[in-house]
Image (cartoon, rainbow, N blue to C red; front, side, top):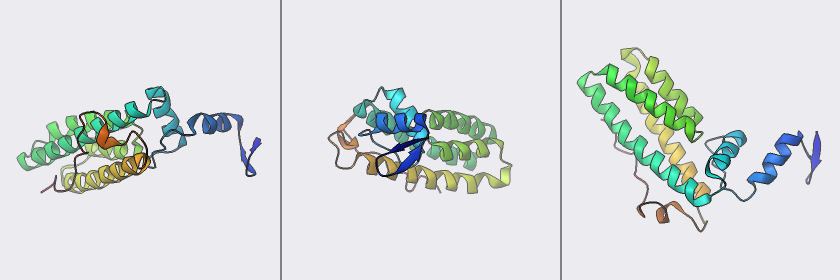
Length: 159
């Protein structure tokens, strides 16, 4: 254990990670390990992280709408494949709870699909709010990255 400023004890790896992540946006929907993973993935580039999260949120909002259409058509096989792709994307951006819900949807019985989709919508909203809060007041806020348009809203994606 290492004692750092403020009397907090950490193991040496955690202390190094905390110093390396200082100043990098911390996304509240993931833990310290997930934030460190995103920092490594983006090379510490805040703008790249913003573009990555913008693309993730936009793609997931579209895929959620597609999942609802799959459900309406009764196409559970397509919904399961789509949920698997969404799980993979969520794992890349450390959205672990979202990824877990996608995994549950992949394995779900027919009667559980609608409840799980509603849960996915709520979790995507939580991720979106966390991203917006992490970039609030920063020079590289999300409205100014990527295609220069605001993040899509996931409200109303369902029935």
